Image (cartoon, rainbow, N blue to C red):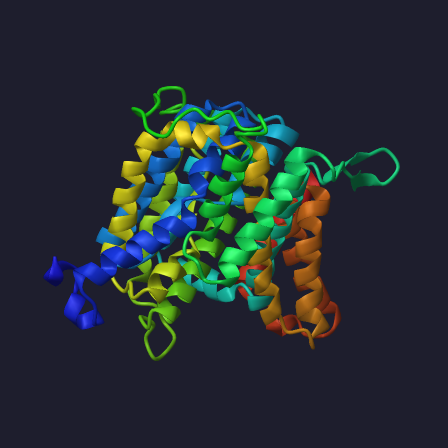
Length: 428
């Protein structure tokens, strides 16, 4: 194991790697409760979604650890699961089987690009401002869903949105849960989000708001979601934009997490390049395809992997440890099913706040950079569409740069993506 992972080369050992993997797992375990709830809103079986979440996270993390030897864990991505359930299935009316087919096709496209030099051209060509604004915009999108699920934001006939009943017990418990998560995170307590979810859930039991179903049991059946993806339906012209959105967000999310984590772990080369980036991206794309086969939305690299890196994780054993823990979590389905919406909604809001931190690195002194970025951020929640936000971001970036006489600063990748976005809007 020492030779395979290169402990000596990276200045680490098995005990440290396993401890780092446990830390990473705790920071991202909230997905076990949140993802099945989100996918259930798309009409999917929550038990099967729970199993698919565990298995997709385990397979993706194992691939990253064994193929790329990186301390990065994977699981169904926050934001993309909401796009899957609330936009593709909910707003567009696309069956969840077809949506799974779109996820699979986006993974195939991602895998193909990962094997070509095109990956560096595409990743390197997207400007930093848009790379920062896309995760921040997805965070705003998640925040809106979290506030709605908690009951703080409600529909209003005159103002579109309004304030809900802040005196309702579920709302008060959810607000307390958010404050607890924030407090634990500020005190650097590992697993602050999952601890906040569990404590909020437990607080609802004596009030009759939480229906506790137990802790351990045999895993539910995966049959309702396994191999249910409709690839033929996803190949239809009307869903090309959905496949493109899954692909682009997956590519940017994984590339950003990979680069950031590699830098934090001291694995980046002096010239700024990332070793084994092709293997890492292939592991990411393989995880996305396997997730669709199992029956869950896009599997991505988790930025929470940085928590394990801070604990000394430097090799793939950290990711393999996370994979083993997700397999063990298969037997905790009753606990996950007991978590009510008022306990997971604060997690969505908390994650939204974390994702918004990316905006601090924008170049606020250059209107041609921050204006397209902020348009991307604003458009996602207010149009209730991640795809629309991305499209407007690329189009406005190319347009503003051109009209200010700085068209030469627009990389060819941006022109290609902007053209594809314009085509999507034209045929929508």
